[in-house]
Length: 116
Length: 110
Image (tube, rainbow over all chains, first blue to last red; front, side):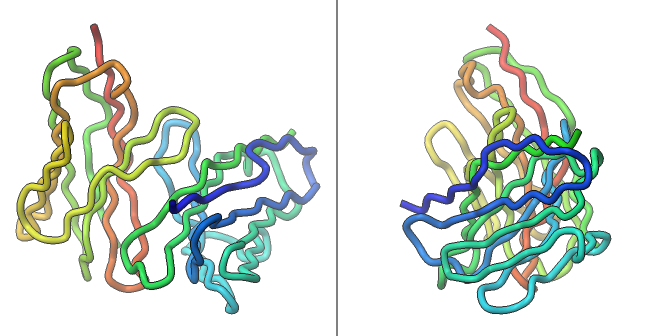
């Protein structure tokens, strides 16, 4: 149980295009999902907290208009990187917290984005 | 803010024991997590400590001292597959958000 999927697993796009990444909790409902970014040989940095049915909460320094987050249902959150640039190339990882699970987070397998 | 410090790299021999230390400074502490991450993959959960003391799970054990802002992850009977990055993460009570340390790359040699 407690499986989180991400789609796509990797994506290559041209500079200026937008890329959407999906995060799904497959066998549980998640009122809260988190989006992280990880650059090579660095640790995970929290970008934003996605709450079902409400606006996402962004960490300091993360542009909300560039990284659009939608948490439309209890099993799906999407992150859209708008007008992607090469510096947005990174490993994007989501995690999902089950309803009632205050501490537990289950991580997705990550999405590797390369912007040319 | 939160400062979470852990060593960058450690090397150990197969079959040996390695201890990875993590120190942190935070307000509103709500637990400390250890994750294992192989290159190019997502982190996998290893342990969660919210009370002082030692938690043992097979070959892996984790210790927490809240008064000292200190935790360690102990890996026993090291295997080659244990070569990975080990991430210490602190959870704040407000929002239950995780803040990760820089990670410790452990290399297990034959």
